[in-house]
Image (cartoon, rainbow, N blue to C red; front, side):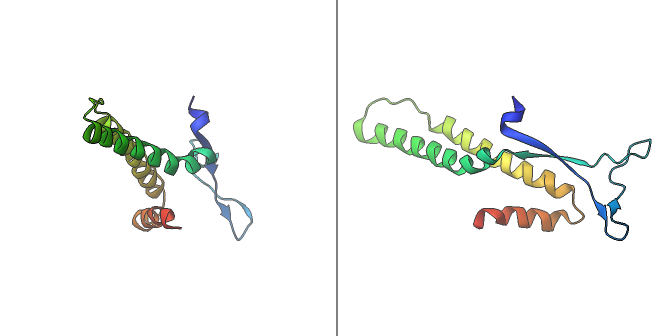
Length: 118
């Protein structure tokens, strides 16, 4: 189920002058609905680097097993490579999705991309 991997958050803005909820993504009746964002669960965000490391390790071990022993180990490298690529695509799509909801998408994407460096 989707709730295990991500959580939905609704973002609303506050009017700093009146200290009230600002009109945020209003519907036809004028009711603020906010912006719905899906964030990965905390454990998914923490586990993603380890999943990438584990998949890379399996790929290297499979290649080494075929080269060193000559044993016909099935080529799982392509499958693992596709899994690593899928994780990378997930990150890129999440960054572009969040960036598109801001006034300056380029700045938001740059800052979100730099998060890995902290």
